Length: 585
Image 1 (cartoon, rainbow, N blue to C red):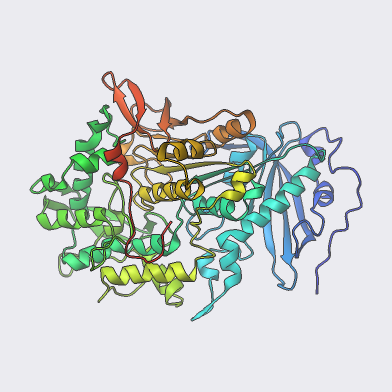
Image 2 (image 1 turned 30 degrees about the vertical axis):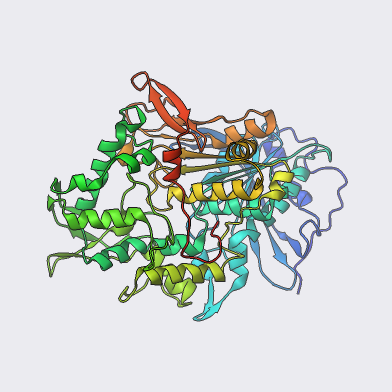
């Protein structure tokens, strides 16, 4: 039976004459501001679900994606349901006090298999005068836990909600609620934004590709899109180790990374401990030069932590890792190089791309067996879970073994996931005509030393959009046209949606929402992307990040940054995935 439905009878807005947050933030005002039925076709708002309470002096600090701030806001929750489905989808909205509201709405994304990243992200909108929202998607848990009805049976409802539907619905309802809560005149513009990183970045692209007419600006960081390839790719490092029959101690790979950073640091013209030009690193540094170098890591005890992208990326039980001492072997370098080369099938065809030199080899982490005093394969469970749960449709968090798994097996798994989830999780449609026609802007960024989602994945998508949207223009013409509304920035030294302890002097774009607001509302084009040094010797100082395809090159002894283009560097980022019959955008 249908739940009670709100009948809106008020002809005036919810807080037309509200003088303060206290008088505005009441359940009665929230109830009056609920979207009318029909705002989201095929659904209805559950009026009995509404809550509202004022929150004062909430402080946040040390956040990656927005500056320190102290804010007041109205915390509103309500739920809606789809006709005939009997579900309940919960929304949480943080609304600025009426005097701080700046006619803005912000939708926020999640990470891994969580459709939202928690309420702290909403504060990052409130500080900019934006009503901000998140959704539980109707499954109110991690998506992978809601994915199967039973072994062998997919529940497609949460799959599509997680894939793109839930956030688009939240934005539709959230915008209408915001307009009515603040009694905005019908002709007043409500600027609408999205911000997210990792799977939140993929969610941002799901909105640009599926709900483009809703958004004035989308901020998508290190997007984990192209799910069919991205998730299986986490297993590639393991299969390299298995194929070459060498399982390097973590300290050996760590030294290779550190030596790569040390040798490639100065290639951009500035010595600062940051590899800003991984393309020049590819062209100029041979990791074979690390063979024979000594490594040493002290014994350590760890437990219960997870590394990398994904809820189950790599979970370590409480264990003691012994001291590691040795020299870099030819076998260890061969493993590292094969990983950097990306997945190539038995016929020599490229199936997928890999991480940039200077990224850590997280997926290749091995485990120590004290009984045999050897390092052994440790299956990266983001990839293992994808195959076990999403391809084999078993309620399992990882694969038990990779026995008989080859590079061709990985290629075939990639194809299978691509086929099955092309219209839900793949999220790589390069035709962005709808958001372009709506006048929307897109700010896309990716850490250049990301060890989880390969940086070149973002470059490949950007180039796919350029070619699809401007097929009849030259490279220079199409690049110029695309930059009018879609810009990509590679963040020097950054890891996955975070600063990088191995390259602490690298900057990070902490004020992307402000940059987007200036671009959309004030026509201030982000020729370079504003960033902040959040650690290291220059902590607190400003930096500017070049827009792709321009790359940073410093002059005057590392004091002047220039954004330049050179063909050889550009070519290192381009891939042709000949292992698949259809184009992989």
